[in-house]
Structures are given as C-alpha cells and as structure tokens.
Image 1: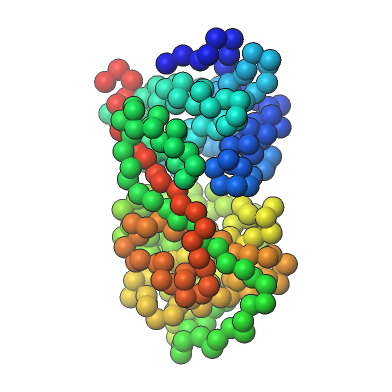
Image 2: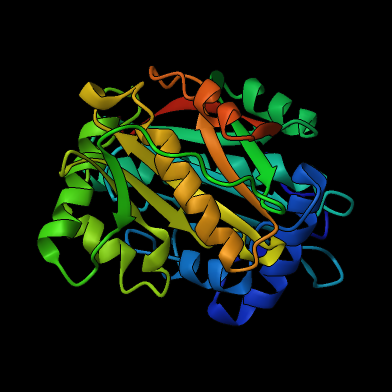
Length: 319
C-alpha cells in the first residue's frame, strides 16, 4: 500500500514535536472531542525505553511540506504485546493512515525477530467516530478483542464523605519509604494478576518508570485493621482539562466487596477537588473479572465514551 502521489515520509526528531502535537490534537479532537496529549507526552514517546525513533516511527508529509501524520510503536515495558498508534489530520490526511499502518506492521515483524520471538501481538485502538480506521484494521486481519469505557463525574459540590467501613482506613503512600512503595507495587501486581491482559512488571522496572513524582499526595493505600490491602495510583494525564485521573485502583481479592475500593476513590476525589480540579475520570476494561462498573457508578461516575481494542498476531520477519 502506497502513499498518494506527491506525499513523502521521514523519521521524526525532537524538533518535530510541535508539528506532531498539532496532528495529534486534530486526531484527538475528531476521535474524542478534545486534545488528549501535550508536548511533553510527544517528547516522552520519542525518547521512551524500547523505542528507536529512527526505526519505530514515521511522519507523513503532504506535498506542501506539512507534517499531517505520525505513526509510532509503543511498548513501555519491552515485553509482551506492542501497541501501534497512528495519528493523522482527519481532514487532510485520512488516506495515509492505512499505508502508515502497513509500514508499522512490517516494523513489528522486525521487532519480533530482534527479540527472538516467532510472532508479536499488536493492538490498535478505535474510538466511536473512527469507522474508516476500523475498516482498515479489519481489512488486514485485525479482530475485536475488548472494549474499554471512560467514565467521569463532577468534583464540584462533592457530598460529605460517608464514614468508611469498619476497620478500613485510607492514607497517602509514603514515597520516602521503599518498603511502603514495594507494598504498593505488590498490591497492584497481585490484584491485577487475575485479569487476562496483565503483564507482570518487577518492582525495579515499575519504580524506574514512575520516576520522581510531584504528586505523591494523590496516591493512596487502604488498610483493613492495619494491613495494606488496596492501592490507588493517580495520573496527571488530564490536567489540561482540569480533571483528576485515576490510573489504577487495586484491591486484594480477599477484601473486595467490602467498601475498600469506594473508600480509596472518595479519598482521591477529595484530594483532586482540594487542588481545584473540576472533574474526575478513569478508564474501565469491560473484560475485568471484578466487574468494576457498579463500583464506579456508586461513587457518581458515568460512561462518557468507549474505545474498542483490535488485535493481530504478526509473524517475525523471516518466519
């Protein structure tokens, strides 16, 4: 599959961050109604571990010399499946998304060979308005494997927090206490171990990935009778929308359905509100066996959009 006549591709550099961001903002506005990326996100993608911008990414350039498309591979852990993301200006460059996908699938095949694997699983996300993108994925063999739902709720005029369940207390994580961070990581890994897509991450790799945060006060641990059993990790991914974001909520299986998750969420919501955030959001995997939708609805969150995840197995180059 080739590009239209007069169009070219080249590899990105950090000098291209503003041009890439303009493309991503146009793509996000079409897909979800608002920009969902900032310049730091683009730069982080281009400098991420297990990513080589000279091999893993392309820019599409129109005949006037403008960058109107960006294709990239994302694998933050360096293990497991790959994620291919292709952003295009929906008005000027919709036709180049399929050719960029073909190039990225060839690159995934090379990455599989580089890792000594017979194949790699690759995933691509589809938002509700992206019906042409969905057709492109199906045409090359992708199949639907799951749906994610984004939920959100207002933080203005929060009701007074109800008393937590007996024996349940929620506190901030202790970032200067490695034992506490290890316990936070253990709870998260253990709680997600029964989900189909979980890829274990060692404490050392997890600690390196999160780095030195400025918002540790948005990370919480729940204890039952003094025993840590739940963890809530926040993210700043929606700060430009004045929204607090729950990146993950984890409760050990023996302590579920006892109000631990709701207590963690309400504590986080209160902290976001203290900081002037107007709303709270999170994403839900509908295949999660804990069926968390009812929990999130009970604390005032409602569905705002969905994302379908499509998957394809790509044989290694030369196999």
